[in-house]
Length: 343
Image (cartoon, rainbow, N blue to C red; front, side, top):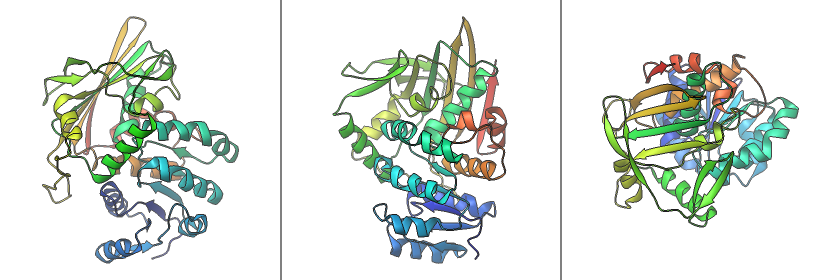
């Protein structure tokens, strides 16, 4: 297979990486698979049959350059992103190709905006962090809900998951974030990320069906607190998580996700409910679907195809809501995601 105009998936052997490779292949996109485990890459490539293998470790810039040679773009699926994002985006900038990742780590995403916006802007290289279920989908929903508004008083993003069986990558990323925060919690208030030791609080959230009213952790902060304020004037962004999903994540004995259909999706269902308040007006947006890991694949693959086709609103480093026409992008996610906008 020719690697001309191919998309490189770094971290292709991981749980989410395999979904991303499958989605690229389903759409007929030439694919290069990369990561540090050469043997595992070769093993999966023998199953896929139509991908090129280019192993590379994140601490080997030469190998990363070879992995990205003549490629059209790179999608980084390898966490923890506190370790991988910097080296892979630097390789992408050297190659002059778009970089996207699926990072849910708040600090890794904040560092991406702080450390690489200038370089990406100078070269006009598209860089889209958090192009995933956490960070990307919420940002698109908020942007679509706001419509012609560029500012709001507050944004609320409630995550309704009936369960959450975390992958090994999710657990590793969570441990890294916990260490970086010294065990403290984080919120976005008064226009900035703020670390605190306040007690966890709970409330009820009335989700649209099929979830209905659920108990949620009132400040379960996710990557939306980085992506949304990166392009919208919002002084307060709050995110919520259903208690049962948070308990699954916290319990060490919770198993990894198990496939229940031919596409490898688990039985997890999600409802993401967004509420925007601006000047006394409320606007909402809702997304429903299956499997937060599997749905990341159509999100990031749709994004990379739009970038390569020139269907973007800006260049350089930007979140999903700033880079794309949010409402149009969300419509394109069908049948993977069902979206409702109510202005």
